[in-house]
Image (cartoon, rainbow, N blue to C red):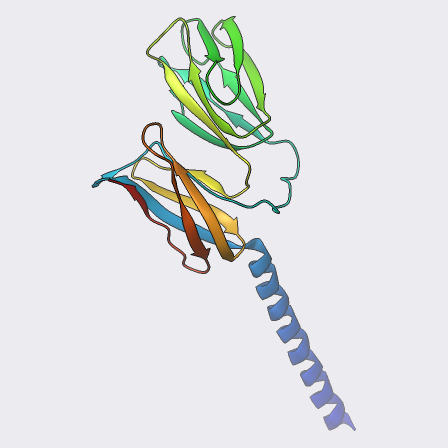
Length: 201
């Protein structure tokens, strides 16, 4: 009996380990995969692009979303900010002079007025679209807030690369925006080691 009991215990342990492994694999599938790629214009990296996937049935993001677009060295930093619809964007004045932040084109229209060094104002971007951001004191300052109705998006790095994390495997329609030139749209299959490279002529 003792021998049989030991064998049964070993079998139960093996089954438990297999179930645990399957559970981890299942959790990995739920977490999704990384979609990577590069954006180019001709032979050069397009560092001001935003890439996102359509996901009309994606769950809402838990908690309040926040992002920061700073005013620093007479520039908006980052130059292009990608967010999900519903995100609150903080606009801190991290410079040594007064600034005014406003947007009056497509997207979110607002005017935060003039405010001093060390202060901050914020805006909720409640609908999708591209908002061009300016300062009426410093006309050369310009930036962009790109609000997308999807949790699967990324701004592009200086070298043109981007990574969209935690994408459930499947087929998606993608969009790629940049400040000038047409928006790119197409379809892609997302799976392990998926790569989506995009380019303008």
